[in-house]
Amino acid sequence: MNRSSASQWPGRARRALGPGADRVLADTVRTPRTPPPWSPAAVDGALRTVLEEFEQRAEPWRDAFDGLDEDVLAEAAAEARSFGADPGGAVDKLVHGLVGQLDHWQHAIGELGRTLTAAAQDRQLPEWAANAGRTEDVRWRQARQALLEAVARHHHGILTSRTLANRPW
Image (cartoon, rainbow, N blue to C red; front, side, top):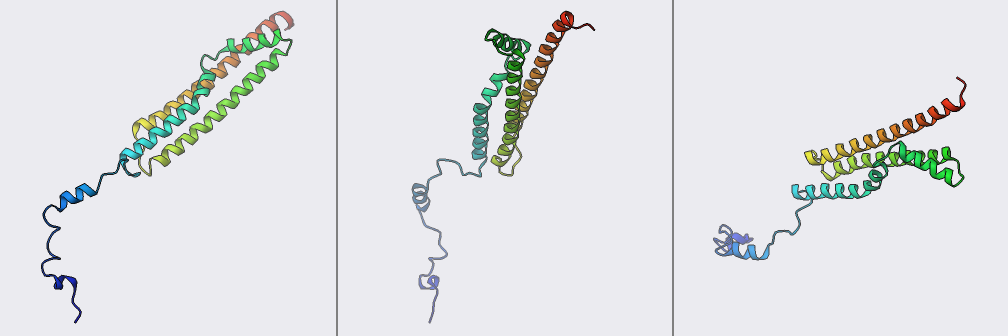
């Protein structure tokens, strides 16, 4: 005759783990030291890590455009002149480099958005993370505007002095 284990030991299957079992389980089962990767705390930590890494990556771009104005371009031209080089070529090279940095920065901002979205694990981005991405986009736009204004003012200054001195019209 084939009997189940519950019928071999009556009362055993229906009884709870017994007195003191919760203490034994508490001693043997520990809470994880790091939150599970799907927990809100882990997602928050991942988002903060992504933003910290981006901050370090974006620092040179921000520095390159900090204080950028027509004087920076004029200094590049003056330095080229002092070494007997083409001042227009020096300014062109500087502006070309800055446009390249803007391009890299813009691509990095797009990558930041994708990385933040992936780190959020199909959840809505917290407001602080979304604001950080928007703030970086604003910084990029300000840097682009500073470059455009510096080029326009530098170019206008060069044209005005040459126009007055050398142009018949």
